[in-house]
Length: 233
Ligand code: ADP
Image 1 (cartoon, protein in one colour):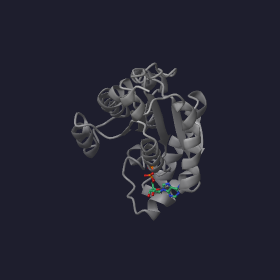
Image 2 (cartoon, rainbow, N blue to C red):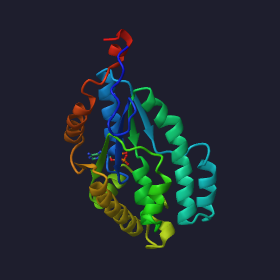
Image 3 (spheres, rainbow, N blue to C red):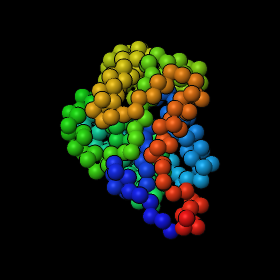
Image 4 (cartoon, helix red, strand yellow):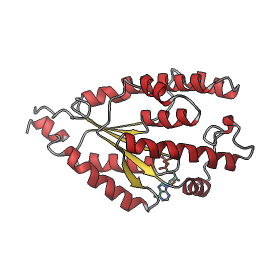
């Protein structure tokens, strides 16, 4: 069996590809399409998304319902959640040499917590266990486009997605525009600091996917497929 070349970004044999952006920017659609394409090319792929784990979902749900969470406690619960996801679902396949596709990563916490007023340095420090990905694709899109996509697909705008807890406006749509605008600003800042690959997500699905495939190809040069691992080629 040939050993996987370790990634220069994090030192593990796998590859870590991260999809970030506002809700409705199309990142889940693109992450899944990329995963299927890589699998069809015989790469070992593991897909994971930003979901509450069993460990914290009940506490977060109750806290949200009763309005008990401050930005700091909210941030700490999400960090616990992410640590659980990282250790259970991201690190093992990364160690085992898989291409790990993450629909949202620690950057989601950085932008949301900063938009809620947490100190960005404090937040980064909490997530210092999360290694740098091989690539972060940032789906950049005007807030208005995400709103239109949501309305078109009849997706409901949630209370927290609209930032209603921050008292920006009593109107859900107006609050959504203000809060998502804050998130977009934070993402744009991080894009420079953390070297994101900016994807113009205000395009049709196909050209966006083609661009991502072109970006991913060089990261998988000499990266073993399932077949080559089985036959030791
Ligand atoms: P996200 O994961 O960023 O929240 P999704 O991939 O779930 O976004 O897409 C949100 C909605 O927008 C879905 O209904 C999806 O079908 C639609 N969508 C995704 N990409 C595009 C695109 N490029 N153009 C128009 N609609 C899109």
